[in-house]
Length: 141
Image (tube, rainbow, N blue to C red; front, side, top):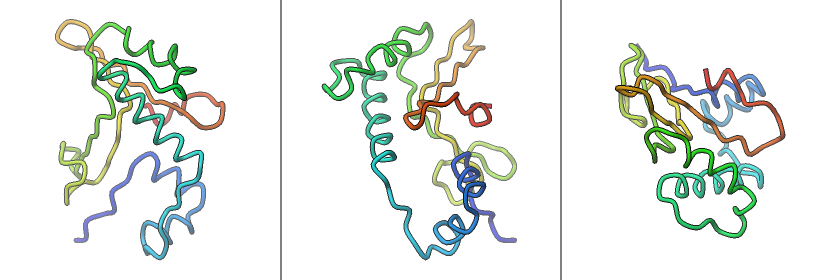
């Protein structure tokens, strides 16, 4: 039996947006995914947010307008520094390496805060740097 292609929320969104484009880029590999200015900005924001939430310190000038947004994660009670956590599951829903040969599902948690006695509560947050919209609830679920 052939190992199924790994999937993620982003993969499902890509298939729903344009199945043909997904097939050409991810399945047939006829083209490479091209980053646009918005996706490059999102990548940069995630890197800076990760560093700030995990390590503290100063933000670059370009990120100062987002200080209040980022402070909510720094000041939240619970564990600190669990940012950009990569998780993988195999077809039996068992944890595996994110880029392992047997990975079936991948997910990256932007900010994970564990709290409560014995860490019984987990807050999962996802940065949205694109259009002004509600948080993508199916992704967080």
